[in-house]
Image (cartoon, rainbow, N blue to C red; front, side, top):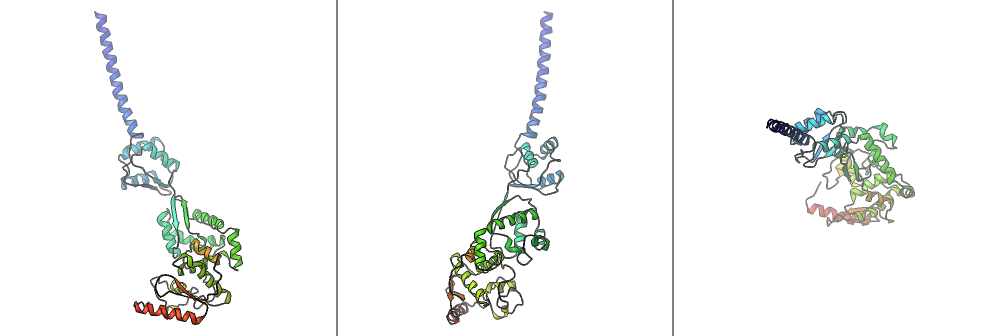
Length: 349
Protein backbone atom coordinates (compact mmCIF):
# COMPACT_ATOMS: atom_id res chain seq x y z
CA UNK A 1 0.00 0.00 0.00
CA UNK A 2 2.82 2.33 0.91
CA UNK A 3 4.61 1.53 -2.31
CA UNK A 4 1.44 2.22 -4.30
CA UNK A 5 1.03 5.61 -2.64
CA UNK A 6 4.64 6.41 -3.25
CA UNK A 7 4.27 5.50 -6.92
CA UNK A 8 1.19 7.67 -7.32
CA UNK A 9 2.92 10.56 -5.62
CA UNK A 10 5.93 10.25 -7.88
CA UNK A 11 3.67 10.02 -10.91
CA UNK A 12 1.85 13.20 -9.92
CA UNK A 13 5.16 14.98 -9.40
CA UNK A 14 6.45 13.85 -12.78
CA UNK A 15 3.19 14.79 -14.53
CA UNK A 16 3.21 18.15 -12.79
CA UNK A 17 6.77 18.75 -13.81
CA UNK A 18 5.98 17.75 -17.38
CA UNK A 19 3.01 20.07 -17.39
CA UNK A 20 5.18 22.92 -16.15
CA UNK A 21 7.75 22.14 -18.82
CA UNK A 22 5.03 22.04 -21.46
CA UNK A 23 3.68 25.39 -20.32
CA UNK A 24 7.16 26.92 -20.27
CA UNK A 25 8.02 25.32 -23.62
CA UNK A 26 4.75 26.48 -25.08
CA UNK A 27 5.34 30.02 -23.85
CA UNK A 28 8.86 30.19 -25.28
CA UNK A 29 7.73 28.45 -28.45
CA UNK A 30 5.01 31.03 -28.88
CA UNK A 31 7.50 33.83 -28.24
CA UNK A 32 9.91 32.30 -30.73
CA UNK A 33 7.11 32.11 -33.29
CA UNK A 34 6.06 35.72 -32.64
CA UNK A 35 9.62 37.00 -32.95
CA UNK A 36 10.54 35.15 -36.13
CA UNK A 37 7.57 33.62 -37.94
CA UNK A 38 4.38 35.53 -37.12
CA UNK A 39 3.01 37.95 -39.77
CA UNK A 40 4.12 41.43 -38.69
CA UNK A 41 3.75 43.97 -41.53
CA UNK A 42 0.69 46.20 -41.63
CA UNK A 43 0.46 46.57 -45.40
CA UNK A 44 0.07 50.36 -45.05
CA UNK A 45 3.24 51.05 -47.03
CA UNK A 46 4.25 49.39 -50.28
CA UNK A 47 7.95 50.17 -49.95
CA UNK A 48 10.54 50.58 -47.21
CA UNK A 49 13.42 52.92 -48.13
CA UNK A 50 16.80 52.48 -46.45
CA UNK A 51 19.03 55.41 -47.35
CA UNK A 52 22.77 55.04 -47.88
CA UNK A 53 24.54 55.47 -44.54
CA UNK A 54 21.41 54.92 -42.45
CA UNK A 55 21.81 53.09 -39.18
CA UNK A 56 19.53 50.59 -37.49
CA UNK A 57 18.12 53.45 -35.38
CA UNK A 58 17.29 55.33 -38.58
CA UNK A 59 15.55 52.20 -39.86
CA UNK A 60 13.45 51.92 -36.69
CA UNK A 61 12.50 55.59 -36.98
CA UNK A 62 11.38 55.07 -40.58
CA UNK A 63 9.36 51.99 -39.59
CA UNK A 64 7.64 53.88 -36.76
CA UNK A 65 6.98 56.98 -38.85
CA UNK A 66 5.34 55.00 -41.65
CA UNK A 67 3.61 52.46 -39.38
CA UNK A 68 5.11 49.56 -41.31
CA UNK A 69 5.07 46.94 -38.51
CA UNK A 70 2.37 45.68 -36.18
CA UNK A 71 4.88 44.93 -33.40
CA UNK A 72 8.20 46.74 -33.61
CA UNK A 73 9.33 45.14 -30.34
CA UNK A 74 9.52 41.64 -31.79
CA UNK A 75 11.24 43.02 -34.88
CA UNK A 76 13.85 44.65 -32.64
CA UNK A 77 14.47 41.33 -30.89
CA UNK A 78 14.81 39.46 -34.17
CA UNK A 79 17.08 42.18 -35.61
CA UNK A 80 19.41 41.86 -32.63
CA UNK A 81 19.52 38.04 -32.80
CA UNK A 82 20.02 38.04 -36.58
CA UNK A 83 22.69 40.80 -36.49
CA UNK A 84 20.82 43.17 -38.82
CA UNK A 85 22.87 46.09 -37.49
CA UNK A 86 26.04 44.76 -39.06
CA UNK A 87 24.48 43.77 -42.37
CA UNK A 88 21.81 46.40 -43.18
CA UNK A 89 21.94 47.31 -46.87
CA UNK A 90 20.49 50.47 -48.43
CA UNK A 91 17.75 50.15 -51.01
CA UNK A 92 14.07 50.25 -51.90
CA UNK A 93 12.35 47.17 -50.53
CA UNK A 94 8.89 45.95 -51.45
CA UNK A 95 6.84 45.23 -48.34
CA UNK A 96 4.06 42.69 -48.65
CA UNK A 97 1.30 42.57 -46.03
CA UNK A 98 1.88 39.82 -43.50
CA UNK A 99 5.63 39.47 -43.93
CA UNK A 100 7.47 37.94 -40.98
CA UNK A 101 10.33 39.57 -39.12
CA UNK A 102 12.66 36.86 -40.32
CA UNK A 103 11.64 37.33 -43.97
CA UNK A 104 11.98 41.10 -43.76
CA UNK A 105 15.35 40.99 -42.02
CA UNK A 106 16.76 38.45 -44.47
CA UNK A 107 15.62 40.69 -47.33
CA UNK A 108 17.32 43.76 -45.78
CA UNK A 109 20.52 41.82 -45.10
CA UNK A 110 20.68 40.36 -48.61
CA UNK A 111 19.82 43.67 -50.29
CA UNK A 112 17.01 42.00 -52.25
CA UNK A 113 15.39 45.23 -53.43
CA UNK A 114 12.95 45.71 -56.28
CA UNK A 115 14.37 47.69 -59.24
CA UNK A 116 12.97 51.08 -60.16
CA UNK A 117 11.68 51.50 -63.72
CA UNK A 118 12.83 54.76 -65.25
CA UNK A 119 10.91 55.79 -68.35
CA UNK A 120 11.91 59.12 -69.81
CA UNK A 121 11.26 60.87 -73.11
CA UNK A 122 10.68 64.42 -74.35
CA UNK A 123 11.83 65.99 -71.09
CA UNK A 124 12.50 69.60 -71.96
CA UNK A 125 15.56 70.73 -69.98
CA UNK A 126 18.40 69.26 -67.95
CA UNK A 127 16.89 70.74 -64.79
CA UNK A 128 13.61 68.91 -65.47
CA UNK A 129 15.52 65.68 -66.04
CA UNK A 130 17.44 66.06 -62.77
CA UNK A 131 14.14 66.61 -60.98
CA UNK A 132 12.65 63.49 -62.56
CA UNK A 133 15.64 61.38 -61.54
CA UNK A 134 15.48 62.70 -57.97
CA UNK A 135 11.86 61.52 -57.70
CA UNK A 136 12.82 58.01 -58.77
CA UNK A 137 16.29 57.52 -57.27
CA UNK A 138 17.90 58.21 -53.90
CA UNK A 139 20.09 61.19 -54.81
CA UNK A 140 18.62 64.70 -54.97
CA UNK A 141 18.22 66.85 -58.10
CA UNK A 142 21.11 69.15 -57.14
CA UNK A 143 23.52 66.21 -57.15
CA UNK A 144 22.34 65.14 -60.60
CA UNK A 145 22.49 68.63 -62.09
CA UNK A 146 26.01 69.13 -60.73
CA UNK A 147 27.13 66.01 -62.54
CA UNK A 148 25.27 67.03 -65.71
CA UNK A 149 27.26 70.26 -65.60
CA UNK A 150 30.52 68.67 -64.50
CA UNK A 151 33.05 69.33 -67.25
CA UNK A 152 35.37 66.62 -65.91
CA UNK A 153 32.66 63.96 -66.11
CA UNK A 154 30.96 64.85 -69.37
CA UNK A 155 34.20 65.51 -71.24
CA UNK A 156 35.31 62.05 -70.20
CA UNK A 157 32.41 60.72 -72.26
CA UNK A 158 32.99 63.07 -75.21
CA UNK A 159 30.38 65.76 -74.46
CA UNK A 160 30.33 69.32 -73.20
CA UNK A 161 27.95 71.35 -71.00
CA UNK A 162 25.81 72.38 -73.94
CA UNK A 163 25.33 68.98 -75.53
CA UNK A 164 25.61 66.58 -72.58
CA UNK A 165 21.84 66.11 -72.68
CA UNK A 166 22.19 64.17 -75.95
CA UNK A 167 23.91 61.41 -73.98
CA UNK A 168 20.57 60.14 -72.62
CA UNK A 169 18.65 57.90 -74.98
CA UNK A 170 14.94 57.92 -74.05
CA UNK A 171 13.76 54.47 -73.12
CA UNK A 172 12.64 52.38 -70.14
CA UNK A 173 15.47 51.32 -67.84
CA UNK A 174 15.63 49.25 -64.66
CA UNK A 175 17.96 50.45 -61.91
CA UNK A 176 18.18 50.07 -58.18
CA UNK A 177 16.84 53.01 -56.18
CA UNK A 178 20.19 53.61 -54.48
CA UNK A 179 22.17 53.65 -57.75
CA UNK A 180 24.68 56.47 -57.38
CA UNK A 181 24.62 59.35 -59.89
CA UNK A 182 28.04 58.34 -61.21
CA UNK A 183 26.87 54.74 -61.73
CA UNK A 184 23.73 56.06 -63.42
CA UNK A 185 25.86 58.08 -65.85
CA UNK A 186 28.04 55.04 -66.50
CA UNK A 187 24.97 52.98 -67.39
CA UNK A 188 23.60 55.72 -69.63
CA UNK A 189 26.92 55.94 -71.48
CA UNK A 190 26.83 52.19 -72.14
CA UNK A 191 23.26 52.51 -73.41
CA UNK A 192 24.36 55.41 -75.63
CA UNK A 193 27.16 53.33 -77.14
CA UNK A 194 24.74 50.44 -77.67
CA UNK A 195 22.21 52.74 -79.37
CA UNK A 196 24.77 54.37 -81.65
CA UNK A 197 25.68 51.14 -83.42
CA UNK A 198 27.64 50.95 -86.66
CA UNK A 199 24.49 51.30 -88.77
CA UNK A 200 23.33 54.52 -87.11
CA UNK A 201 26.85 55.96 -87.12
CA UNK A 202 27.16 55.24 -90.84
CA UNK A 203 23.85 56.99 -91.54
CA UNK A 204 24.95 60.01 -89.51
CA UNK A 205 28.27 60.16 -91.38
CA UNK A 206 26.39 60.03 -94.70
CA UNK A 207 24.59 63.21 -93.60
CA UNK A 208 27.92 64.80 -92.60
CA UNK A 209 26.70 64.93 -89.01
CA UNK A 210 28.06 63.51 -85.76
CA UNK A 211 25.72 61.53 -83.48
CA UNK A 212 25.56 64.59 -81.19
CA UNK A 213 24.53 66.83 -84.10
CA UNK A 214 21.90 64.29 -85.17
CA UNK A 215 20.40 64.41 -81.67
CA UNK A 216 20.43 68.24 -81.62
CA UNK A 217 18.59 68.35 -84.95
CA UNK A 218 16.25 65.58 -83.76
CA UNK A 219 15.31 67.71 -80.75
CA UNK A 220 14.12 70.45 -83.14
CA UNK A 221 12.28 67.94 -85.32
CA UNK A 222 10.63 66.48 -82.22
CA UNK A 223 9.54 69.93 -81.07
CA UNK A 224 8.05 70.75 -84.48
CA UNK A 225 6.27 67.46 -85.19
CA UNK A 226 3.05 66.56 -83.45
CA UNK A 227 2.84 63.37 -85.51
CA UNK A 228 5.70 60.94 -85.98
CA UNK A 229 4.93 60.43 -89.67
CA UNK A 230 5.87 64.05 -90.37
CA UNK A 231 9.26 63.75 -88.69
CA UNK A 232 11.26 62.46 -91.72
CA UNK A 233 9.76 65.25 -93.89
CA UNK A 234 10.70 67.94 -91.37
CA UNK A 235 14.15 66.39 -90.93
CA UNK A 236 14.66 66.48 -94.71
CA UNK A 237 13.61 70.14 -94.82
CA UNK A 238 16.04 71.21 -92.09
CA UNK A 239 18.87 69.24 -93.65
CA UNK A 240 18.15 71.03 -96.94
CA UNK A 241 18.52 74.36 -95.15
CA UNK A 242 21.72 73.27 -93.42
CA UNK A 243 23.26 72.03 -96.66
CA UNK A 244 22.36 75.26 -98.48
CA UNK A 245 23.66 77.44 -95.66
CA UNK A 246 20.18 78.87 -94.94
CA UNK A 247 19.27 79.84 -91.38
CA UNK A 248 17.14 77.12 -89.81
CA UNK A 249 14.64 79.69 -88.47
CA UNK A 250 13.04 77.06 -86.24
CA UNK A 251 10.43 78.57 -83.94
CA UNK A 252 10.99 76.02 -81.14
CA UNK A 253 14.59 77.17 -80.80
CA UNK A 254 13.40 80.76 -80.31
CA UNK A 255 10.90 79.65 -77.68
CA UNK A 256 13.69 77.76 -75.93
CA UNK A 257 16.01 80.76 -76.13
CA UNK A 258 13.32 82.96 -74.54
CA UNK A 259 12.65 80.28 -71.90
CA UNK A 260 8.90 80.76 -72.27
CA UNK A 261 7.15 77.55 -73.25
CA UNK A 262 3.67 79.07 -73.09
CA UNK A 263 4.29 80.86 -76.43
CA UNK A 264 1.88 79.89 -79.21
CA UNK A 265 2.91 82.56 -81.67
CA UNK A 266 6.52 83.60 -82.25
CA UNK A 267 6.50 87.37 -82.69
CA UNK A 268 9.21 89.77 -83.81
CA UNK A 269 10.05 90.77 -80.22
CA UNK A 270 10.87 87.14 -79.38
CA UNK A 271 13.10 86.89 -82.44
CA UNK A 272 15.42 89.56 -81.05
CA UNK A 273 16.69 87.42 -78.19
CA UNK A 274 20.50 87.22 -78.12
CA UNK A 275 21.15 83.51 -77.81
CA UNK A 276 23.03 80.87 -79.79
CA UNK A 277 19.77 78.94 -79.65
CA UNK A 278 18.03 81.61 -81.73
CA UNK A 279 18.28 80.03 -85.19
CA UNK A 280 16.80 83.18 -86.75
CA UNK A 281 20.04 84.98 -85.84
CA UNK A 282 22.70 82.27 -85.83
CA UNK A 283 23.48 79.88 -88.67
CA UNK A 284 23.72 76.13 -88.30
CA UNK A 285 22.61 74.01 -85.42
CA UNK A 286 22.27 75.40 -81.89
CA UNK A 287 25.01 74.33 -79.44
CA UNK A 288 22.80 71.77 -77.74
CA UNK A 289 19.38 70.09 -77.89
CA UNK A 290 16.25 72.07 -77.03
CA UNK A 291 14.67 68.97 -75.48
CA UNK A 292 15.45 65.31 -75.04
CA UNK A 293 14.72 63.91 -78.51
CA UNK A 294 12.82 60.67 -78.87
CA UNK A 295 14.31 57.64 -80.60
CA UNK A 296 11.71 58.14 -83.35
CA UNK A 297 12.99 61.68 -83.95
CA UNK A 298 16.63 60.56 -84.03
CA UNK A 299 15.82 57.79 -86.50
CA UNK A 300 13.71 60.24 -88.54
CA UNK A 301 16.81 62.39 -89.05
CA UNK A 302 18.93 59.36 -89.91
CA UNK A 303 16.26 58.18 -92.37
CA UNK A 304 15.16 61.62 -93.54
CA UNK A 305 12.79 62.13 -96.43
CA UNK A 306 14.49 63.14 -99.68
CA UNK A 307 12.55 66.28 -100.53
CA UNK A 308 13.24 69.80 -101.80
CA UNK A 309 11.32 71.62 -99.10
CA UNK A 310 12.83 74.75 -97.59
CA UNK A 311 9.82 76.18 -95.78
CA UNK A 312 7.13 74.90 -93.45
CA UNK A 313 4.18 76.40 -91.64
CA UNK A 314 1.53 74.95 -89.35
CA UNK A 315 -1.71 74.22 -91.14
CA UNK A 316 -4.44 76.76 -90.66
CA UNK A 317 -6.88 74.07 -89.51
CA UNK A 318 -4.84 73.56 -86.31
CA UNK A 319 -4.69 69.83 -87.02
CA UNK A 320 -1.05 69.72 -85.94
CA UNK A 321 0.14 68.98 -89.48
CA UNK A 322 2.21 71.35 -91.63
CA UNK A 323 2.12 72.88 -95.08
CA UNK A 324 5.50 72.48 -96.80
CA UNK A 325 6.88 74.64 -99.57
CA UNK A 326 9.83 74.78 -101.96
CA UNK A 327 9.64 78.48 -102.78
CA UNK A 328 9.20 81.56 -100.63
CA UNK A 329 6.14 82.52 -102.66
CA UNK A 330 4.40 79.24 -101.80
CA UNK A 331 5.42 79.69 -98.17
CA UNK A 332 3.99 83.21 -97.96
CA UNK A 333 0.61 81.91 -99.10
CA UNK A 334 0.70 79.19 -96.39
CA UNK A 335 1.95 81.61 -93.73
CA UNK A 336 -0.78 84.16 -94.55
CA UNK A 337 -3.48 81.52 -94.10
CA UNK A 338 -2.03 80.52 -90.73
CA UNK A 339 -1.66 84.12 -89.50
CA UNK A 340 -5.27 84.82 -90.40
CA UNK A 341 -6.38 81.69 -88.54
CA UNK A 342 -4.45 82.84 -85.44
CA UNK A 343 -5.96 86.31 -85.65
CA UNK A 344 -9.43 84.85 -86.00
CA UNK A 345 -8.90 82.99 -82.73
CA UNK A 346 -7.36 86.03 -81.03
CA UNK A 347 -4.02 84.29 -80.57
CA UNK A 348 -1.39 87.02 -80.58
CA UNK A 349 1.37 85.51 -78.45
